[in-house]
Length: 89
Image 1 (tube, one colour):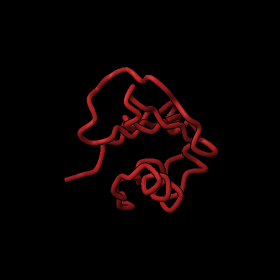
Image 2 (cartoon, rainbow, N blue to C red; image 1 turned 135 degrees about the vertical axis):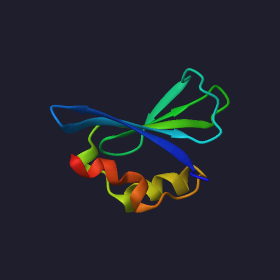
Image 3 (cartoon, rainbow, N blue to C red; image 1 turned 90 degrees about the horizontal axis):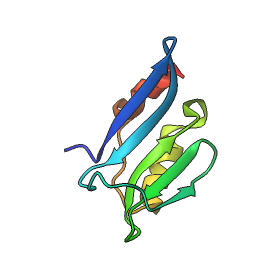
């Protein structure tokens, strides 16, 4: 089972942005957001649980950096293949 779902937005054939929805998180409206480093913002529900990660600058997001963020959030790591769509950035 995948720890989440990556949705990628393209413009003119290039990655514009992406959103990593946390598996099992209710598709609720974000109650709070927090910058998590260059190009990354975490959305939280009203109870402080992560809902997803907004990727505003995919060109600066590496697998290692993304997995460090997941560790900090108490979430399982992703495999390189799961972030492969960001390589078009």
